[in-house]
Length: 328
Ligand code: UDP
Image (cartoon, rainbow, N blue to C red):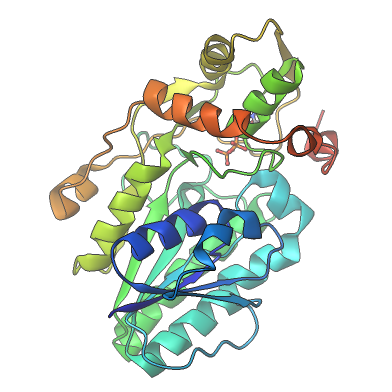
């Protein structure tokens, strides 16, 4: 039986990966320090013989007994509000955390896949973004802690590959959505759906002309599994190229939820990328992958999940002071 370690196992993507590898017959070892992850996402797995969980910070020394075939490093705060709120942990998990994963991989002869991000392209001047584009990142802006950690993470991963011969894979993940996202993580989709469900106005930042391209989580997971099993060690974009402005997206959420609330405009956060769309030529050619779930199907599945949350979970919104991070 193959054994896989998944860091960030209790987070949005980590928990979906745990489900997928359990379904595929692996022994899954989850690790999370639960800063932004939630046990609720993986609680159903605890009764299984082939699931283990370590409540541990991957930025500190990690050891896992026994053999390991794969390590997937998905631990990291991943929304702009999260990494502004916990910037040092964000930097540590993308640097010390990945170093520990690579060291463990070297010791065990395991293959490592690390979760990188479209944020490595910063506020891109090339559109759509191919893997060859080096990006336009502000290292000292509010997003710098995340963007530079992820860029460092890619660099050290390539160094372990080139210098130590560790088998490495790098996925550049574009905006992804689906069930198990945290309602109050500040990202646009849970923000809008939460607002609709609570009967609040939808907050569009800036004039709403900035674009994003949203990928449903099941498509992303399939792309990640294919990349892990491929023999391609360089970064690969995984995302859905269907691009939309944030204003249009707010309208779609209004249609979906039937809310009678309106859109209100707030100031745009600093360094908020103006446009983002993955060039997925490589994923198509190398992995034979492309997204299958369109936005209306994916949004419906996601909305069903959010509707099933308790009133208590729905009201848990004053966690963050969004305005603190928005420059006038
Ligand atoms: N956004 C918005 N209203 C919100 C939250 C986000 O208009 O309540 C915008 C945000 O400014 C950005 C886009 O939605 O332009 C996507 O934001 P998100 O935080 O989801 O991810 P990003 O792609 O910026 O990392």
